[in-house]
Length: 310
Figure 1 (cartoon, rainbow, N blue to C red):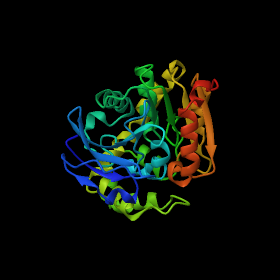
Figure 2: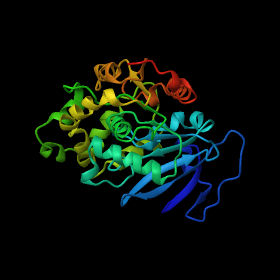
Figure 3: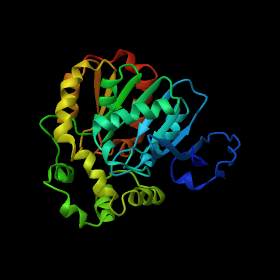
Figure 4: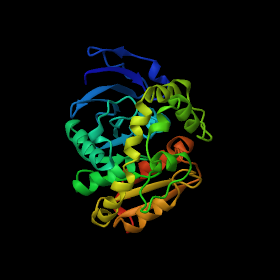
């Protein structure tokens, strides 16, 4: 890591630093507290923000940031997963606190990045948890590197062909150009999306992180990733039948921007998949955190071995 600090957990407690800088000492073990290391790793020349804990566990869970959020979206599920696995959360290039670059802003290229990140982080047997924009990237990764990931958990992300999106996300993806979006206040756009999170009081520190992550032209530049869907999702659709990696698809029953048609599209074409619906909106990992964590744990601790054919 180029720079890092220790904290307890991954929620608003990330402000309770126990050490700072490259020489910061790991906090002493305290019952019921999960020491977490947060900082930056250089991957493919990009400064990538990540967090990790539970280094003694034999298996890993690699989690990728949703949009327009960051790795702190997993604060509500972090402790539950970290008690059983070595957990790593990463802000994808161009999202959250990670540096971006135009050539990685597409699902296919992001899938290659995920494989590279897992390899360079020294992750062995790994379950890839990649909701939202991570969905297509994770499936491209599974298609291009069979066996690299023990299983994949996706959902709440565009996948269907033809495109099946609604609300502002459809507009972001299908608008003819980005010109009018450049004139908008990115904090207002991101804030409006965050205001749709139901049943979860977003901690102020985390909301601020989301807003700061997309200031300036960061939000408009991050749109390039989703705007590649019309070109890249048809190619992914052709490769789904060849993905042998077990896949769990978790959907919010009341998702107003990514309709269930996307999960159903994947489940019908993936050879080893399971589709689970949760009574939540789009941001399932926060709106139904306990249920989401329980599903991921059940899956990663053995459920993936019995995934029913799609």
